[in-house]
Image (cartoon, rainbow, N blue to C red; front, top):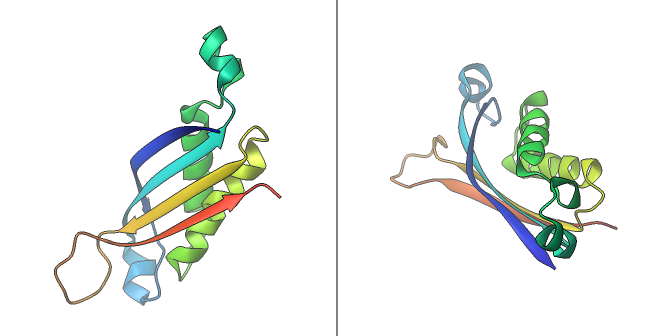
Length: 120
């Protein structure tokens, strides 16, 4: 299976358990790998034979900011579901959702959750 990757997609949203996270929002970063057969696209050089990363970004953005969730786990699942629902050619999606401004008293680059979901 072939893979297309989107790295560090920056999105602003209101996910988090703490009231200030829901009120003020913060930046999140998403890494997304999606798997599909790219043999036809490799031969044809035709956008119709692949799943455009621009279309995937639009889908991810819409799903990610539509609601506010307490857990980044739920936000990541929402992204994975949206991608699989929108693009039948995609057989699997891996989502890493990074929260660099997590309200934790420590020095860190980010807190994150990674999930993999396959089409049933």
